[in-house]
Image (cartoon, rainbow, N blue to C red):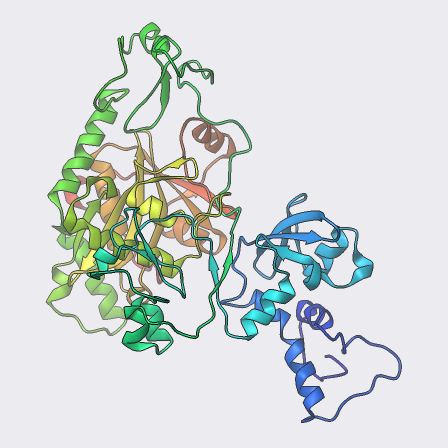
Length: 506
């Protein structure tokens, strides 16, 4: 308990309390307690909670780049949870510990010397948050949130969402500040702000995120046959590199010829596949995309009905006509764009931005199958579950040939969680992989979800050696702070699948 303001605080909150602007709660002789209700006491109480807002919801986002500055940068790190992860030792520290780690413990002013990538101190940001400003991540993807294409984009003044004016059926660019419909509704701005008239809401603080996607600690890629990394970039010869359009492995032209796989005389003009399995899998994926929406099997819809009954929810004919489909942003089917946009919205609702070292949010690129920040997601497919024409659950799937597939992101809208929809979606995915004879499925799992995947779905932790081998050959997706799990894909006879009976809320 603080002896000055009589608040009961945890150890971390007490440290935050002591680091506040006035530091009036630091124990010292002859402390004078102001009477409650005075203006001075009110100011001090407000300052006590000022810096805590940085580590609360809607505060500084996880992954925000930070550095301690005193006459130059001394140490760098990034915000994670309720602390700062040091860039040199990877330990999570409180702001005061981060300052001490920089060799400046005597200053006792971490919030005035720890700065973000845009030069603002933590104290500056805390003041801005207290004045109603919001924090948004760096605008780096430059893709329309509706269609996924780049071009001349309109950015929301509040959340920085990017859209084409044409996708909103706007005849011309709005004058002044423009707000998307969600921000306009949330802030009571009405039609004026949506149509482009200026508002008095302060521009959000743009923060660059970092270190959410875990980069391998070794060189990746190289020829899948000889394991060498050299290649020819100007002429076609034995060291020219060819990529398989399905498994994404790379091969030297000379190694392909010497191993007897094929004898290429020039760079293929069309798709090229390293084996019959990759060619077959690619064809099946394209066929599934073109087939569009399909009704899920009865055994899967029964799972949804059972979960509704268990929760006492109303059951109507909609539970008997749940649909699913596989989408690919590169296919550019107009009817698929609203579904892809809905899937992206679900991922952004359920997850913090997924970022690489560049600070760009990877979710749009992954959903629409684009390349960004040196990472290629052209082989990523989006699988969605649809109820009454609304996407309720979605996942991202990439198949690296017959040996392994990955499911890096799955999510269900909050209002539809716990109703069996994710179980049905996962069953559709596993059934599809089984039909392609894919052997294993891998995914990154957060600590709190490990028991769900291992106990209910039969996943196990992938051995570090096996993960390293995959990372050296493939662009597998691994997130910092997660464990990589793997399971053998069920061989599913007669369109059936073993579903867990007591899978908790998605």
